[in-house]
Length: 474
Ligand code: GLU
Image (spheres, rainbow, N blue to C red):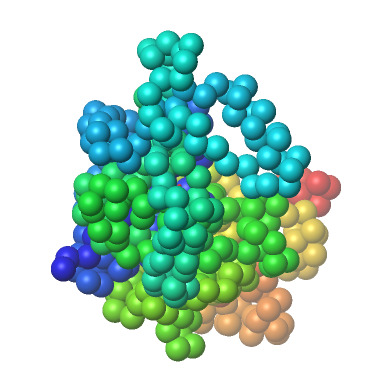
């Protein structure tokens, strides 16, 4: 049997991390088993679905690298197919037309609630035919004739055996008055037609599963395997929502996280392999087992994501990290063509940054012609007494035949020795002079990355008689 999984988002918003985790599990299982992963857009909620949401979901899937083997399929392209199946269900008595008005249904619901009963359709139209006085062409829905006795039993791959009494299940609407299928009907036909073998989805769908199984059985189809994954909670134990900060996948991108870090963080929310925390994509594929998904809800841990992000900035595929860093520089309008290679920036800065956004904030001076000076740093470090050291440095650096780390280091050391001051007394003013502030990679590394021309130009600017006057008063 070839495994076929699917991710079936409704395009009513961006891709959230809960959805992304479901997609990841489906994708991993398909990859692990050399099966197929399908993307299906469930766009039958025409009021809430938007093309912008579809585009946002597709972008997020691409950014995460969750490539699908088939799709995206769109349910709204398949209306004729749902029509054909409904005819079959009507013909076999598994579905019926329901002409009950909204008013009647509302009244019934109110009465049931008042009587403390579970609201459900009372089956008035189930016997078939058009109620007296009703025009047969009048708007109507098509309902499923759910079995009225017995149970639906299925083996959930995460939760074990689950049992639902048919009496608890309603005669649910399959096709609305506008001819569009409801979620439960569309999902069943698609899972069936697309040969889905494993449905992995959020446990908010658990109550839909027995209904879907009944529809499949009415069609003579065998149900797929189901795995309902637990929800993701915030640190406070409440369901993760915007209140907790970023929840959209692309928001994490904008905040400077790498896809590998987010995936690694997500895979561990509800799944484990011993006590391993760091998983390359290959390892995830290798070790992933549906049987190891946890029942208990998992809490999202932002600090862990930071930690993983730093790990992947330091150890991830440098070309990929650089491509992502380039995207961040571009977003803030910094041109990186005329400056150090991004991989070198990553090597120098990853140690002191948690996100790529932070890396950009701390690295702009490598690419710009002018430096923004932090007033406090200038005041403290670029005092009149250190200017002679800087002048000395400027001359010695200018004379260097090779612009490389050890030679630069030796020059700084020698200037300090000559002036009989500690190396920091030279290095720190130099740092402020060339970067504008007091924090940067080691000074020799900083100068190498900056290049000779920029370094000398910045020293010249600081040594200009106007500089101190201008910057000390700011
Ligand atoms: N469109 C449904 C959702 O976004 C999919 C549920 C399922 O996977 O069956 O919740």
